[in-house]
Image 1 (cartoon, rainbow, N blue to C red):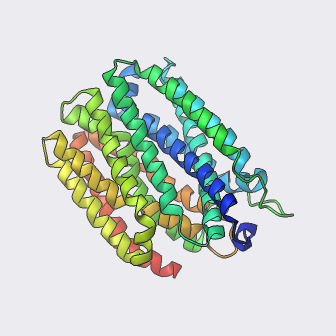
Image 2: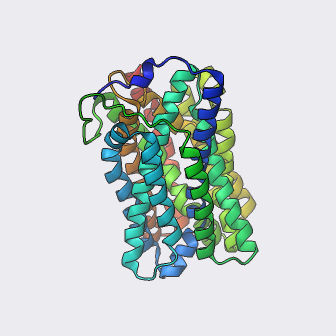
Length: 392
């Protein structure tokens, strides 16, 4: 793998830096909004296709599988074609799949669309994170938590939009199609502000970005976080809707509360990263996420459960930004390759987590199954010193 040319790039002048930050912030927001709209509509998908928890978990597995398969080559794609083209192609695929997921009828169509949704969102994610890391290095100050805050704000906005549209009796399939069209406009307008340069130099980039050494351990730690985060994306709305016997609009607030707290945590995350060591931050994150999940799962009051989800969001807020920023700065590895390598393992958390929750829910209950989120948060905090000690 080649070292990124971005690492040695001179600092951008203020107008160029400002324009680049605006573009990348909007794209993080778009990705978060897409995930927020999807998370809020999981109960509608379950009802539309007549799924039980186990079959729904298999559909989620298809999406995560598409993500992991794409991540194995995402670094090479970004290096070869540049962030702009990858964002445009992957974002279009992601939003088209999202718009169609409630338009289809056969169960096979759902699995195919989930596969494409996972692949598109994964490549989009790697491209904007690699671009964000390059921007952070050029600006010579920490920016990644702030960028990920835009992702969380987008998730909150998407879930709140669905809440309002549910209240307005707009059919879920029109909610998805309309929001996807609006996001596509923002995506294409902002992608023009991204760099289009290749970073593969004169050698072809490695086609597979499976990590080794420190990147593998970073990926494992990221996966522990993303098991918890992915489960919140896919199951929080259904938990509020089904386990606490609320309506669809209130269910959408489950993901909105989680995303709002993540956004707040990430807005202040760059300051937190400067004041606390990574190990202390990771341990505190594990404790807060575990306490929040325990609170949500031991109450019958929707408002208290929403507060618990907010604590989970605060706890998980800065784990991925810290790990992606570290992966993008491993010597001898381009930012795109580093982020893709760690993401490929991290997304295994998304692949294993939601189906695991679904299988456990079928065997017992969704409430009991979600205790696994607290367990993975504990493991994340306990493993922090071993992994981050290796990166030091």
